[in-house]
Length: 82
Image 1 (cartoon, rainbow, N blue to C red):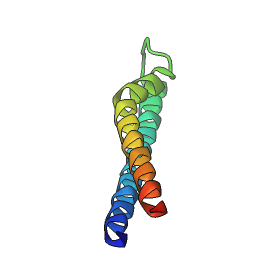
Image 2: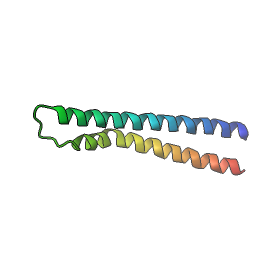
Image 3: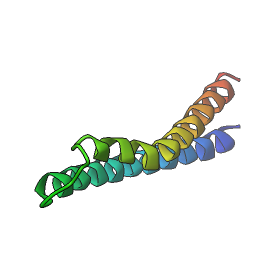
Image 4: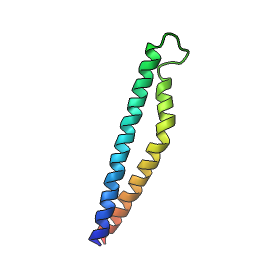
């Protein structure tokens, strides 16, 4: 049983790393969007629209990755008890 739990732990760690990378990319996308809006010659978008677009583009990915991480965590915890 330890062998399967080890693979699950590795998969859980990989999903966590992917989650952190996606989060960092989303924050970078948002920061660049804010800078482009604020430094543009003329725009009708407020600066916080970049935050909304980042949430729309990266939110579903982050949500899916978080759900997968939680499911793997629950499975690891249940298999660890047995």
